Length: 154
Picture (cartoon, rainbow, N blue to C red):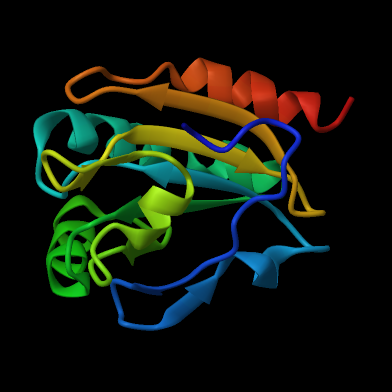
């Protein structure tokens, strides 16, 4: 079961595609965070979703939102993918222990060893304000993310 709206977001530290640690709680008091779990780098639906994030990144930045992509891929695969696609936001590796962060958010598919398409908007105090979970091959509605981000201003 996925982490619920209103609960405290499980904290984590994962390495980004430059093998630098990124800790969710380091954004507390400073930025909202959109945590975007996706199954695998270089896959079609994931590429489409993250390219849309890339193309609309300034809209999130304008709203004081840090986007963090998370998958079970190694940092090396994530680096190659980020370079290929021009991603300028952190892609984090939940490689080992395999899928542990996805498990803590309730979006790990044990049978296939990958994260589901889980999206969590965490506010500056560390509370989950929006949750969207989609199955494999089911693209997400990113307009819902933008509405959730806008609701933080209200």
